[in-house]
Length: 420
Ligand code: HEM
Image 1 (tube, rainbow, N blue to C red):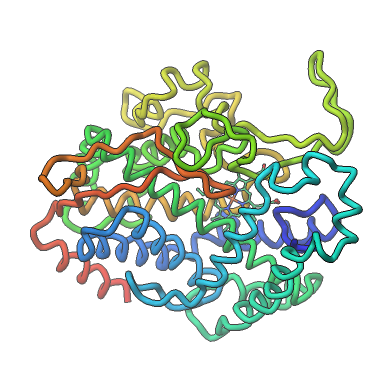
Image 2: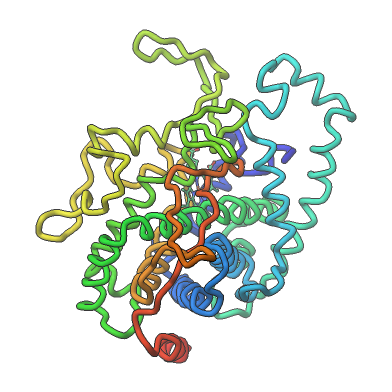
């Protein structure tokens, strides 16, 4: 479908290396720190939308947050309002079509690789992929050039257009920004949805984080400067991504099924392939074998994370309250971003984005279970999932966000005006 243009599906070629370097460069810890004002403003908008649209499901708030952040950061577009038009809607749709098509087993070629040549030569068999490809380059290029170089807010399209990236053609750069959008939108949205699920089911941990927020920030909203003094927020972030990885990869699930009931047509991740015959213990993995990193399995390894199905952020904290150093085998606790040379380049960006969102929401609200028509609490099922291609999200749920400050709206407005 992508004719070798999409970074995440490229072989390890010199072109992939150049694009990967540019992705690393624009998403390095130093580069992503420049997006702090944008990420903070979006966290504030998330709180505001929970306050003003209490009846919308968690997915609607999470979707607005992740898309709005991504389109500003990548294309310099204006923030999305809840219920407002999404100028990049079509970009989201093409991403959905692409991810739907990469589920292992979706193409006959996955089962019978010898048919690859036949499919490649047949206009009839390729027609869906061709139609998809014909629309996408223009779309990506249009958005890539829409970003204004005059904006004060740093924007990745503009950064790529600068002279520093001369070895990247305009088309490749436009596709690169396109892949960053499609790799970030659903993953970030789903991580935020799991946060709401976890906190609604385990309010005792929100209370711990709120005690810390009350001491450190009081009645003003948190900022990135507070990060070192709010280890509970980081522990919650680590635990959300461990407990429910948005990209479990090797673990399979599908719409309406409980976790672990396998459905081979569904992958929830990106496949790798063995680049040569590999001997692993007594097994031989032949060259070309499709391989999934079982990130779910790693994050639920009881030797590393005792009682792994239990959501418990305190596992990442020392008795002193500081963050516990990661076990030597993992180097760090964010296993959900993959490993090695294809590991997620967006990790530093999204960790900051989620950190400030979690901090803002916990500072602003008690998160309680939604009520049904009879006023009875609805307990969401932590094991009900929907597989949407490369990610697996929790089933739809609502939340009752009860403000922790009577004048929350004024506090948000004050924070907004002070940021200008
Ligand atoms: C919670 C959010 C996210 C999760 C859980 C996540 C997870 C992953 C995983 C598991 C991979 C595959 C690693 C592998 O193949 O071994 C990946 C690849 C990738 N991610 Fe992320 N990601 C997230 C957010 C983002 C964001 C925000 C961006 C961009 C701004 C991004 C950009 C990419 C790209 C471009 C690749 C492909 C890299 C390559 O093939 O060289 N991701 N991500």
